[in-house]
Length: 506
Image (cartoon, rainbow, N blue to C red; front, side, top):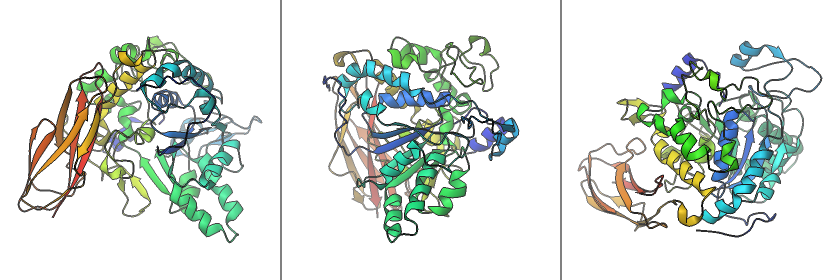
């Protein structure tokens, strides 16, 4: 997500245990964790998203880290060739220029070096963190010369192509933090190679069975102009509204009572400072940092905190992580959202388009009731998880500098019985979970109904006691009812995990 959306555009969108194994250069063992490739243009918010992602790198199987371009960042061809954006906003802002705010293709290096430094601590706290050496082996340069450039094969596009054509048929999530052009080039190269061959039908089917794009807005025209017309069955998760609460205008999207989770007292004290060299590189307001290559990155200048584009800020206030929902969706916290983006989770909630069944999106059809504003809100499907997400981030920041016994770790929540019960109208049923905490912390269990996700419209009475809840169903209503068991520990920076009961009421 980029910083230059007008207030009018924003208003429109809003209506819208331990493991002490030493580091080696071996790759992680194959796992059932979600496979993912990140494409990024290196915007400062991408850097911050990247840093947080590294703290969660045990939760998914990172298979590629690809430099790409976007409407906001491209290198140019080194010949002075002038380029005019295909996107109306940047066309009007910049006109014909030879390059734009290019942060280069080495900015991941100091972050991976810092990750290597904190890896011995991180890997005490959870199994599965990849080594820095492994992550370095996944870095490639994709299509970066201009916005939307997809005419030539690159190391990055070839790498994506090889992953799409490999024999591993688990889904691979292609995170789009910039433009879709390097992914588009990979797909075009597959098409060019196989289109006229007898293998084309099976190759096409293989790709669409595997690939899932998670895009934060459109940051070039390659999805619209090439991917959608030529790969119409390829799945895309498209987030155009809900990411705002993690983006530059967060002050206008996040309820004021939760601003503290993004302000310097929390971000600076609990995450950025005294948490090791990786988090010290996290960009925040007034921190004195300046990204090389981006002359519009002035956020770190402590003299420019008042009346900034998106408000007045304090030192160490959060700037933006607009792309983080793309991997927050992949973290298994018990909400069972990975294969059901319409059910909602830490990456927000996306519903299947009626016109394009391969497309899941947010917007005016995906509204959750926001109790802070007493309105139906297109951003609340993401906002509702903010406190848990930010506290979890702070707890993981502690992992970078503490031993296992000194930090907090998430509770374990298991369903007793089935999490897909069937019931009849008017019935009373009991739902139960079993909970434990690796640190011996006390746990608080809450049950609540995620009304907007289900099709059940009747009245429901919940009577909870400890780890079980009695659910009294309405005698005249049917449909699908989602009951969430939310379990939070009492450690410093409480961590929250869940189980979801999907009740089919007949």
